[in-house]
Structure formats: C-alpha cells, structure tokens
Image (tube, rainbow, N blue to C red; front, side, top):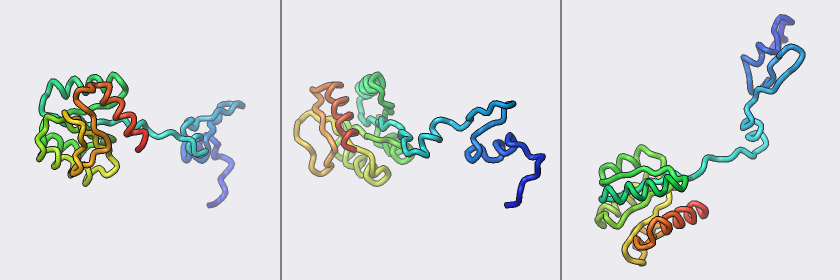
Length: 165
C-alpha cells in the first residue's frame, strides 16, 4: 500500500473504511462513529439474539391462536401451522428455535413433522402437548406438556427447554 497524499483527509478514510478508522473529523473535535455493538464484538461481549421463535402445529385453529397470543404476551415470537402441509412449508423455510406439536394432530402427522424438524432444523427443540403424561419414545421430545396444565405449563416447558439448549 502506497503512502497517501496530503490532500486525503481523515474524513475520506472514514468513508473508505469506517470500521478501521472509526473517527470522523468534526473541526478540532473528533467523535467516535463506530457502533457500540462493534466495540462489544471486538471484546467478545456481543449478545446473541434471544432464542424465542416458536412454531405451533395443531389442527384446532382457535386453540392454536389462543396459544400463540399467550406466548406472544410472554415475549415469544409465535407462528401457527394448521396442517401438515403448512408445517412442512414453515419448517423448510423458517428458522425456529422450538416446534410445539399439539395432541390434536394424528400420530402420523406428529411423526412426519418430527422427522422434518430433525432433518431441516437439527438444533430446534421439540415440545409435545398431550392428554397423557407419557412421553412418546418414538418421537423423543425435549419436553412433554399436559394439556390440562394450560398456558403456564407450556411457557414453563419452553423456558426450561430453551435454557437447557
């Protein structure tokens, strides 16, 4: 790299490489223009995005809408799928942290969606909502919530699952 001519100002260098030269000439005063996140990233303290993206798969529309609204009120980004086709599309195209499978789905649909999740989103957690306390060993979910536990049970399971994750 050759030397710069005296005609090139520090402001021109900022325009060329703002991350290398994070100062902007402002008269005799210089102010920092690098974003705070950049300095935090250099120090290794940059926070990652919260892991709160949830896909709810269930056949009963009103129940899925209710669950999604409750999750949104508690800070989760909830998306709803009402059929296996919608779930397939969402899983292949979306980026979710947790998939919640409702007891309203058939066993075949639960197995198909579980397989898709394991293929397309291996880091994604899986929670089932069921009407029994027994876990399905074939699906092997990260958590199982009893339908009778209501929204509090689902929120607790989501938080515990994401904390372990």
